[in-house]
Amino acid sequence: MVRIVIAGTGAFALILAQQINQTANPLLVLSCRENPEFQEACGGCDLTVIDYRNRQALQYALRGSDIIISTISGPEQINLIDAARSVRGMRVFVPSEFEGALANRPDPDPVDRGYVQSALGVVRDFATRSPPQIRYTVFSCGLFMERFAPGGLQSYGIGAGSRVQTPDDYLVNVGEARAVILPTTPGGAQARLSLTSVYDVAQFITAAIELGTRDWPTEFRMRGETMTVQQLVDACSEVRGVPFNITVYDHETAEAEAQYCQETQDWDRWHFLQKMLQTANERYHVRQPNLNNATQVQPTTFRTWLQNMWGLGAANPFWQG
Ligand SMILES: NC(=O)c1ccc[n+]([C@@H]2O[C@H](COP(=O)([O-])OP(=O)(O)OC[C@H]3O[C@@H](n4cnc5c(N)ncnc54)[C@H](OP(=O)(O)O)[C@@H]3O)[C@@H](O)[C@H]2O)c1
Ligand SMILES: *[C@@H]1O[C@H](CO)[C@@H](O)[C@H](O)[C@H]1NC(C)=O
Ligand SMILES: *[C@@H]1O[C@H](CO)[C@@H](O)[C@H](O)[C@H]1NC(C)=O
Ligand SMILES: *[C@@H]1O[C@H](CO)[C@@H](O)[C@H](O)[C@H]1NC(C)=O
Image (cartoon, rainbow, N blue to C red):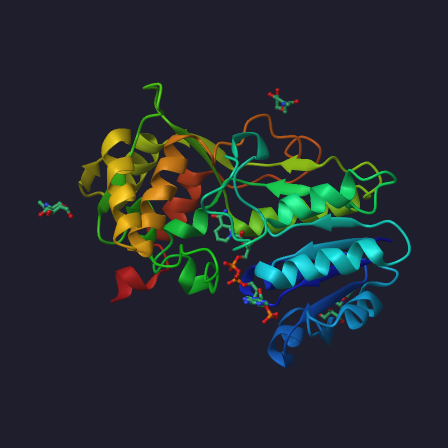
């Protein structure tokens, strides 16, 4: 039995909680507010309202847990890590990452969600002290496929903290048949990226829990599919059956424009360009997955997922309205 704590009650936390509810492992959810809808939707899971500034209350809530899965960000997550390492017993902390693989992460990271302090840096620091005060495991999955769903991640209630809510926030707007891409790496190769549906991410995490947390590595890598940026846009165009209006950037232009956005403090555009550059640097390419083969999860491929979302006859509001 693995005693699990999930911090946060966003849509991603709910999808994960629902998946964990299918197992026999006890689950406690932490939230900064009462949330009966969440509790009902996750099958009557326990929920504790927490003030992340109250260290004692946090420590009390975390006692006896084996894993803490964070879906929160900012100083609250830092406080959570600090409380987790100071409660008696060793536990695994899963920071709120769920994106590209660690090997491709720039340092410093321009799009880190820690705002001031990187949660990954903090948890690593506690994990490498002698003796270690905590263990950590990052789940790397590449991009959530749901970024390319009708309405974008916003329609799932995901992405508020990540600036990737609407279809125009990243790479390709499938509904409007347009894309803004930087298709090549700085070396001139076709840039690759990996994609996993959030439902498969939740299945993979749950399957990893079922393996037992004793031998968890510091990174679990999973992917539904890997493709190039150009292939992704082509697949969207094929499934929609219409040509896409594609604006193609090169590195020099993207970097110059990002620099200009920094000077003019146009942070929305700056984030957009940073993500484009990061994508071209293959930040979201998950090499050598170590969770796909270790579990029975059969993740959906991007093309299958796209077909379900956007293919003729797909049950989405785009075709109905
Ligand atoms: N790979 C991808 O394509 C991709 C895309 C988007 C997101 N993600 C990942 O998915 C996860 C969820 O992302 P998200 O953007 O949906 O999360 P989010 O909007 O930032 O919020 C998640 C939860 O954190 C809590 N929260 C939000 N703001 C807070 C604050 N200022 N202080 C304290 N708690 C706060 C809230 O829970 P309570 O109110 O219950 O406390 C909220 O439900 C993250 O790990 C993110 O990195 C991945
Ligand atoms: C899972 O959900 C069911 C209701 O759908 C509930 O009765 C059960 O207690 C939940 N199990 C756990 C472990 O949370
Ligand atoms: C394609 O997109 C660009 C940039 O958004 C726009 O200026 C142009 O008018 C579009 N072309 C067509 C044919 O829609
Ligand atoms: C995972 O399994 C597939 C199919 O069984 C195989 O082709 C692949 O080489 C395996 N990958 C690893 C990393 O073991």
